[in-house]
Image (tube, rainbow, N blue to C red):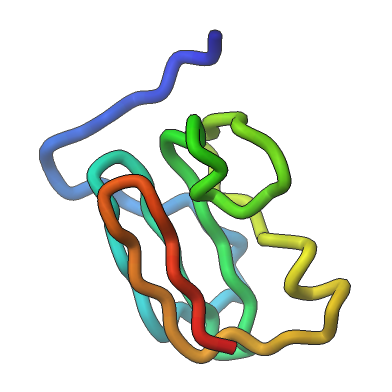
Length: 89
């Protein structure tokens, strides 16, 4: 099992420099950000598939949700629940 660092204090995001974040939401153990270009990046605990990468893998690194890009969907808003992620496209 992958070790995921859960921090109870603010931390800098490690996102590519050219990304501009327009929205952020935090669940109990995962985080999601929407960029100004309408892309969704997620990271944290993924046991229930809440990261949106088509698996139950957890990650300490922000990863773009490729399915939304492949479908040509632009993310407008994201809201994280305790073990869920809701996206408005």
